[in-house]
Amino acid sequence: MNRRLTEIRQNLPWIERLDIVNPPAPLAPELAMQIQEQEVRRAKQLQGNKKLPQFDPAEDPVLNEFKRETMFHRQAQAAVLEGVERLKNLGIPIIRPEDYFAEMAKTDKHMQKVRENLMKKQVIAQRSERARQLRAQRKVGKQMQIEATLKKHAEKRKMLEEVKKFRKGKRQDLDFLDDKKSKGNNSDKKKINRKAEAKMKAKNQKFGFGGKKRGSKKNTRTSSADMSEYKQSRKPGMSRKSGNAAKGKQRLGKSRRVQMKAKRR
Image 1 (cartoon, rainbow, N blue to C red):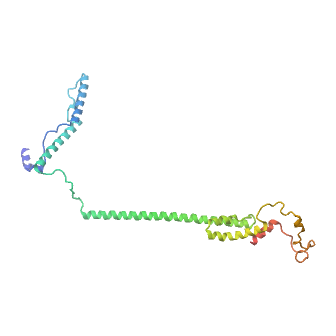
Image 2: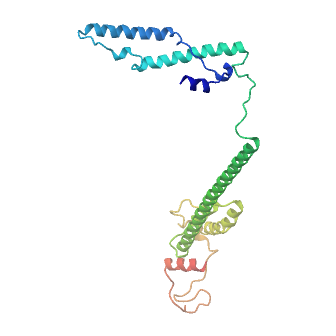
Image 3: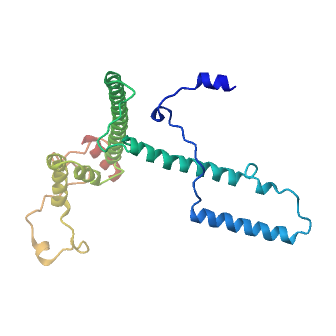
């Protein structure tokens, strides 16, 4: 064994070997205090027990994991302290300078390829996100267009129904035209309102503008003496213009006349 050890041993300087053999470093004060308290507590437990064991495994540093790890730590600490001192004596720096840059494991050409690949993936992700947003916008726009079309058709259907009711005489007013007029712009309002204004003007001329109705047709002394609108009386069954007997059917009722008037419009 000694002969083989002599053959493989190399007489190199210490800076090439960096081997150190030294005793463990002293314990830190807080660690020494903790170990001492533990030993005192252990001794009290053993004194209370009458049957003292001949061999305590806790006292063996090989079997006690806490003591074994503490010995490793102390041994490494002592080696570091001695090794740093030797390196300083040899003039070898042990602290990395502030402006030190370690050489990268990858070359600049390889890192440029990696960068180009990452940029390409980023551009693809941005294009995909932009396409997804455009699809979502087109979907929302199409939905809004469909809703607007359905709303327009519903309004048109409602307008046609109101017009049919007016033509059949079920409705006497044109308020739905005012509702339609309020939704459009000013030019559309003028176009829609023109017919309604003419109709309202004719009604006002025929029926007046409201007010008291009771007793409005009652004769007075002045109206009774007024003969300006007097027309010559005619016999029953005679026509107003020719005076001959009226030909044709009898006059329709009021509701039928309103319906016929609405159809002519």
